[in-house]
Image (cartoon, rainbow, N blue to C red; front, top):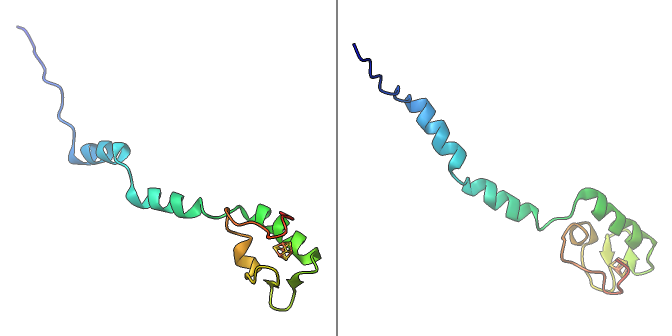
Length: 87
Ligand code: SF4
């Protein structure tokens, strides 16, 4: 007697996991874009070290007197530059 077996149907949980793996997570994409704006902390620390040695740096306010920026924030942003090209 011929036995023709049909493939077992996948469970709803299996179907969900298949969809999840192929779908693009919009939150993950947004997070990556936001994080790409910032430098890694170690690179930011190098910039801050340079500023702390600079005569334009107002240590108490943590502001650069050349560009008037708040340096703990400016040094974290990837596309920012020192106005005197020190970093
Ligand atoms: S950004 Fe440049 S000019 Fe301003 S404090 Fe830092 S090193 Fe000095």
